[in-house]
Image (cartoon, rainbow, N blue to C red; front, side, top):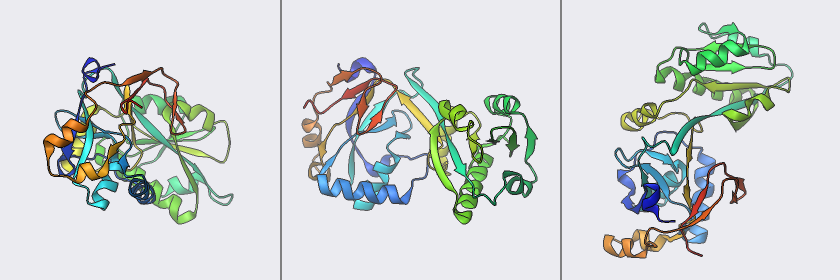
Length: 272
């Protein structure tokens, strides 16, 4: 399958020109930097919005490149307005200690309002609140709708979970129902995000917390396996010649890559 058929453009861009929209997890950046150093390749392209250079997928790759002082990166530029790119959310799942209560935590937040699960999901979809805290039998609406409040609420709960030693996991929003079947857990879900929110965060530099947005890109370009030493070179034309001509092998939705099963089709670019 040709990249042009999917509306993608594969190329090499200066790392300094790319705009992340989310924070990263330092431990993951360190692990990825070690992997890149060991393998000597950029395994997957960084997916960016063609118009704004907003990074849609690859925040940790970008941060690892910055840490390693690699000046260029292979990027796949896409039309972010395309229906082939869907924007969803990650939910944070917290497991408090036996002695901790969701009510106690939320009681310290004056903007928290208790409601039903159905009402909470509706308010989040209508973007009437910053975030919802969901449990097996109740829900709370926390914060006002502006993006700044979304950032603040998520950051507050992450800080609380770290201070109290809670377990924290990230799950796709479609899997929330499964999490809510178990008591002694609660789920933090941000309000519905728009693509304009993502671009605004990137342009302003006021980044969303890590693992807030979730992009589904169909087909998702993977496995470019581009030599790092070539990326360190200054000759842009030589870099372009190393790319594979914009073609790849297409795998169906549900395929597994690097231990993860993907809902969208995968477009392998390494021609291996």
